Length: 349
Image (cartoon, rainbow, N blue to C red; front, side):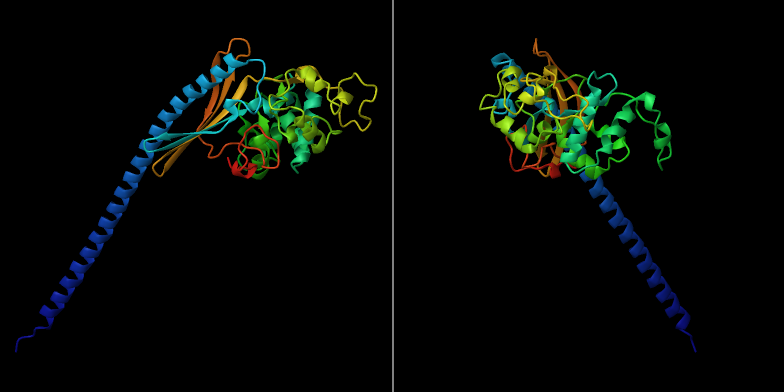
């Protein structure tokens, strides 16, 4: 009698082998499809990024043209109701480009903490005032100053980190360098970034565009209410000269013209008399943030543009493609942009 069981066993084994091969092919096919999809998406993202960056080049030229027109119209004064300070959105095919210009001289200049600054001690205290206003540790100011100063010799503090590095002992080129300073975590930087800049030492603060928090940081004797009162005197066209600002009741105690100088016996301010050279009514440094949206993809660029106060000639200091949102002061802060719906919380990088 013939035994069919071995044949049936072979048929079952063959079926299992076929199913196994089919499963492997299905997995490989799925992986290939997924890989292809990722490649297509990556290619699309790269193409969109390249296209967006091409647009950003055009945006840079457009911004320069706008700032040049502003210079020709009135190079003596820059204020918040001028055309450059307005947010603009332009249609693209397919998508939009949103452009925002900010006065970088409306912010506290971190490079004022460098040892080459003639009023370094004053700037250190003003940075402490700003930190205090934002609810951050004042010690950040001292650590930032030391990070810039080779005489401080703080390398060992940073070489002991999990990822070791040395202090820069140099001027900051970009605000994000502040993240390298001990005690400045991403949350602290997020709060600070709408109020800080990295300009050449001695760049003046534009009193026509500075926020109330930056203005209040000018002295420990000044409050937000004092700063708001001073800002309220700008009018629609800003202060025409620094002398107009100098004549304000709130400012008089700091000009040296009054015998009633603020008490500096607590040594918080090493110099309670302000220097006119620290202030201006026009600006040379402008921060531009542009967001280009193409279909469902987005690219951004932040750049710092310098405009010579005498000739109007411009050049770009840096371009940063990493930011996702503009650096806008909080909604309750008088700021250097006419947008009111954004806050500092939007600044995440």
